[in-house]
Every structure is written in C-alpha cells, then in structure tokens.
Amino acid sequence: MKKLLLLQGLLLLVMTVNGQQDAMYTQYMFNTLAINPGYAGSRGTLNATAMYRRQWIGVEGAPETQTVSLDMGTRDKKIGLGLQAFNDKIGITKSTGFYLTYAYRINFGDDESSLAVGLQGGFTNYRANLTKVSLIDQAGDPAFMQNVNVLMPSFGSGIYYHNSRFYAGFSIPNIVRTYLRKDQYLYTTDVVAHRYMHLFFMTGYVFDLNEDYKLKPSLLMKAVKGAPIEADINANLWIKDVVAIGASYRTGDAISGLLELQLGPQFRLGYAYDHSVSKLVKYNQGTHEIMLRFEFGWERGDILSPRYF
Image 1 (cartoon, rainbow, N blue to C red):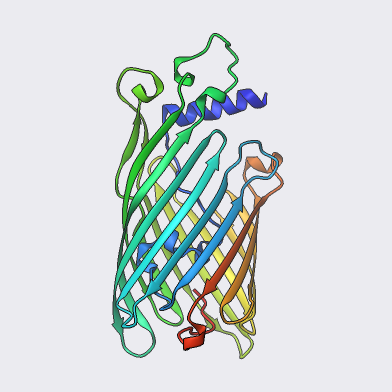
Image 2 (cartoon, rainbow, N blue to C red):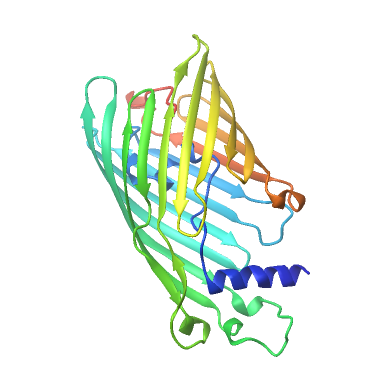
C-alpha cells in the first residue's frame, strides 16, 4: 500500500504539477528573505538565519526542508544585499537552490520608516530518483526508467515597507516559468510539468499592551495557479522583550504553536509545532520547525534591540 500511495503521488507530480510548489515555513516572519527580496538589509546589520522543518512526522517521504540565509545593509541604509540556500526533499524528489538578492531602500523621517524594492536571481536544481520506484507492473514504465536532474533558473522581485512597529510587503519570488518536458522522462515531446509563480502578501503590527507585554498580529497570504488562496493568521505575545508565545492558523491545513526566545541582543531561537486540521491528521504526528538567528555588529552598537521583525 505504501508503494502504491507513493506511485500515485509521483504520477500526480509528473502529469501536472499544480498547487503550492515552493517550500513553506510556519515561522515565515523570521525568514522573510525567503518570501520577499525587498526585506534584504532592513535590519541594518549582517544577519544569519538557519531553519529546519520536518513536516508530517510518521508519513514516509514527507517534506523536509533546510534553509540558510544571510542579509546585510550598507551604512547609509540605502542598499540591502542577501543570499540564501535551501534544500527541500519530498519523497524521491529533491530541490536544492541558491539565490542572490539586491534591495534599494528609500528612507523616511526618524522612525526607521523605509520602502524597499528588491530583486533576486539564482537557480534550483531539481532531481527525481524515478528508478527507485517499485512498480506494481514489474514490466516497467518508460517514465520510470530514467532519473531527472535539471537546473531551473529563478528570478523574483518584491516591495517591502516597514517602520519600528509596522511592516507590509508584496512579492513574487520566482517570475520565470520553468518546466519539465516529456523527453526528460523518455517520452517524445510536450511539457508535462510547470513551476508557476507564487504571489505573497504579508503584513504585521506591534501593539503596546503595557511596559512588559506587546502583541504582534501578522498575516501572510499566498496564491498560486491551481490551488486555493491560503492564509496564515498569526498572533505573538512578547513578554519583557525576551520571550514570545504565539499561535497560528493556516487555512484548511494546520494550527500551530510558536515559541521565540531572545537569548541576548544577538542570538534568537524559535520553535513551531503544526497540528494538521486536514484529512492528513489521521496519518501524521505533526510538524516541527526550528529557527536560529544571529546578528553581527553588537560591538559597534549597530543592533537595535529588540527587533520584532
């Protein structure tokens, strides 16, 4: 039965790749560069972020994602630079990518307000180990007699506005429409799979409840051809600017609990747990996600602490 389910899932991928294709993160608010290139350099310092996500524990071949990103701003706060690398594995398929990011920022007034336009470019190496699939018909199918290993270009853009309390952004991380052809599967002609544009809108605000407590609601909306619009609705409560606890709801998919710790002015640790609310809830024990962030420049007084996004 497991082999049959794997085969059915793979056939859906090969015949028509619709729905959400980019890796998703519950703690997207701590990995904004992966969604919007306009974010690069918005914190004004050199920042390193690493995330690990293991989805749907207990499901064989479930998604597993690792990502590392770096971004920094120039002294005049007008230019932001960034790079990110990721590895996303689903079943017998694996996508590994590397992107470079450039953002130009227009600064306003004295409240850290700025509007940035960002561009990113890079590539994704997509691999599918088709020859490892155990077929029901042992006579073999030509679609499963050759592995796939292709390099797909990527180019994206985004705009991002923020001040000390509010942020909003819109982005298309990949504008280039890439595809796989049948001849890559020992067929003859024609396209069998597309990588579609993903559209993201994000916003959030920090409210002061009193001296010790702050509430930060946020929203992320995602749209891609062939799938319903999806929204992440989040709220985090900051306690003494050291600990944040929160909850999130991803429409039609999961509810999540979030924990964030500010371990000194430079080091931040985050954890999220997703519990499925879809039909998959019967087959998995949840999703775990860990985030680590380190900010350089404390010795020069460059870091503004705390930062909420």
